[in-house]
Length: 156
Picture 1 (cartoon, rainbow, N blue to C red):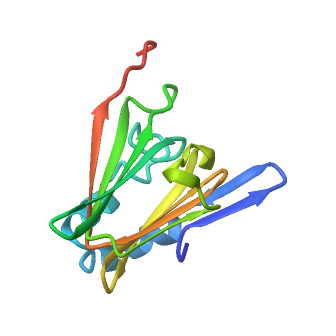
Picture 2: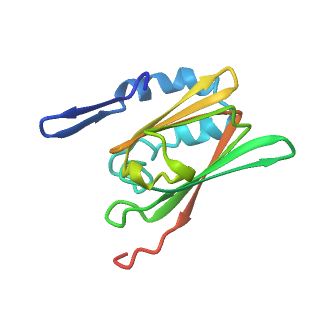
């Protein structure tokens, strides 16, 4: 990641979006509409928000083509103590997708919980990097749409 800091420490992890948040006003105008809306949502980097992406759990990555346009759909499941909703991110016009470490058949559950993500302008539209406890996903696309849907949390 360029601006967001995710570092392993002796106590766990240090995650700090401060520099990215400071850059967002300048970056937002260069992001496609959906990516800009998701990145600048006030809850996205609010550690106390139920829509803060930390602790979401990657569940499924689905790939396809529609009219020659490559797309990906990344499904992230809630963590009941933090979230009230699941998150689905639909990437359109995908030009590159890298999963590290590589996952067979788009099985991304081994990435474990999300630590943080960063969306940046790119010549193809935008890049979205999601760093997890067990690896990362980077997708370059024309745009993305993030959709939150009510989750089944029995304690809420």
